[in-house]
Image (cartoon, rainbow, N blue to C red; front, side, top):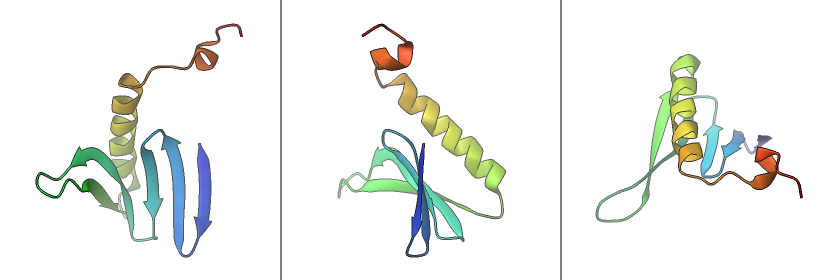
Length: 80
């Protein structure tokens, strides 16, 4: 996990395609979905006054991404 800050925004890189950022008012991340017509990425947002709810949703998205992503041999502990 990587954490970065600057320009009034904090970013946490949780997993492939899961970057959570906040401006101090809301947490945001990509849902993994695209809008129908424009094909733009759809994001979700949770206010910072309920970090537990945001954390649960980030954890759910993390699990979705892990299930759909092949595990590196290095993460499994396979010998080189």
